[in-house]
Length: 256
Image 1 (cartoon, rainbow, N blue to C red):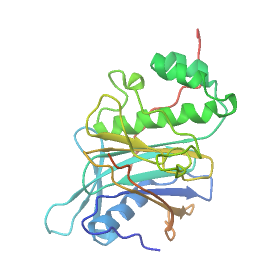
Image 2: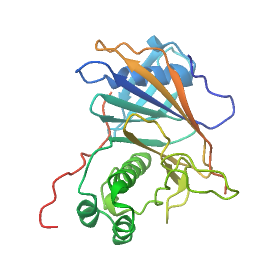
Image 3: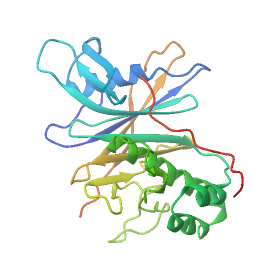
């Protein structure tokens, strides 16, 4: 299914490519798919490159008006995630859910308030909560263009919302807290976790005064890099009021 943008509506599109073999998925294929979809060009007319700061970009090479699409890329094992947004900067990060020494890692890397919040969470869900905070920090750093430099791991995030927790008005929240919520202390910056399933934790961050909706599109990527048909898997409503960009998650803590 072709995922087409809605004219005049700021939307973040997230492509989740899952491989069916042992080879890494080429991010360039998904980036070209994103460019073709959102810039209205054929994939052969899409150029993937890197800016002076090393961040990936997608553009059109058909001789028409210069068009550059803000994008962000992240990997986890044989999964590659690409986020794209016509209206402004975007960041994305993905991690695979797995057991972690969540409290030890949080006490070493996170702000004391976040480590204390994590300590008060149910033990069975701490690893997932830790990863939601981690991916949020990564995604925010990418949206800002600074990564985790200058204390990015200490940058406070809105605490993740548990699945099924009540919202204002009694409506259940999306799994993982799907709303794009304001980042504390930073004007015009929002982050959230669209539910994607498959044991993945994905965070999306945007720069701007409004919170755009997020559309998640699943694609299968064959071993030769062929991108299959897209399948829309989720829509996250906005809150009202060929390389990778990521830093490896530390899994061994000494002296903590």
